[in-house]
Image: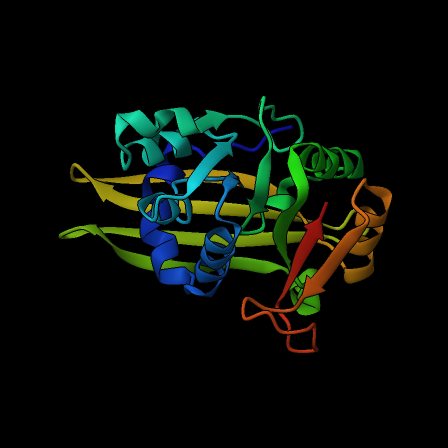
Length: 250
């Protein structure tokens, strides 16, 4: 099952995540793109947080996403000549008639793959689209055990204005399923528009991973070389790490 971004969530995506996320992950992936210097694929390109800057730096980059609503927002930022670089495709079975030197799946895109069969298929699909010595980099968060046992109930994680005098709020609730390693997330948007209160809900599951599970997945795949780093500065895993960054090489 695919969990596409509703139009309302795509509409406010950039506004909300500009406040919520730092720039470390973005700079890490942009640096990898710069070092690659060749053909790149951005899986889960979304509204183009990384893609747009890479394109401005003249990277030969392509992007896929399963959400038409997100792609529509991205295309508003692009010259129509660049539309050919974006396509509505899935991580598991995307297809190109050429290969890449770097494929990235940033901002926890891999966590949307719930079943292990889909995870292996996605990894192997990436492998088949890489040139020799090409790299595949993706990130997932290190599980927070306190949240996995208690969850979150109606936590307001964003309040702001999307236009002068027009407010928007996001409320998050989570329900962990430890046996299946899934976090069921409910997002609620509330905003003012045309003198009315608007509301939209979106329910989406995320699959969380532990370190050795990530390693076993790669061991089962076609990749033979990989390493895990613990932050976007390139440091090793440590008790303070909040992110697993998987760097796989063909």
